[in-house]
Amino acid sequence: MSCLQWNTSHAVFVTEIDDEHKEIFQAVGRVQEVLTSRSPLLEIQKATKRLISSIVGHFAHEERLMSAARYGSIRWHKQAHNAARRRVAQFVLRIEQGDSAAGVELVDYLTSWLNDHTRVADRMMGAFLRNQRRCMKLTFRAGTKPIDACAWVDVNGDAFNPRK
Image (cartoon, rainbow, N blue to C red; front, side):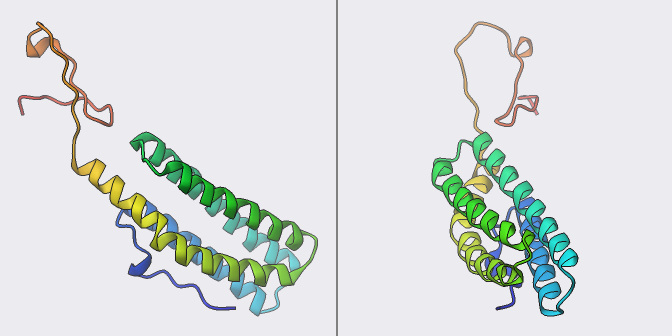
């Protein structure tokens, strides 16, 4: 069972996503800790539930961000998330049935999966999201209204004054 540590090689340079990744890495570390210390099954299950909660919330957040930004590779990225969800659910079922070996396998799986996923799929998504945030896209429609009669919004739907 190798130790999973977050470092800048896992960074996607979107603060909210990096913070969630750090939380997941810490939760994996906590599961590993309770497994290696031979903690009671209840402690293993508690640490596993915290990990799963972090993963579920994070995947949902990433998918909302990708959808809102109209990320072109969202389908591929969600397929990777769905495959991980299914695999993790299999481990969790075994852990709930008292199979502590499944905990070790879960940590090994997530260590490998997170290393690959954060460095490729999430890094690609992060670059796209950073570029979206940098480039405010405006759509102009020809019209005869004066500038003050128009409601101006940016790509996020936030109002702004075009004269500033």
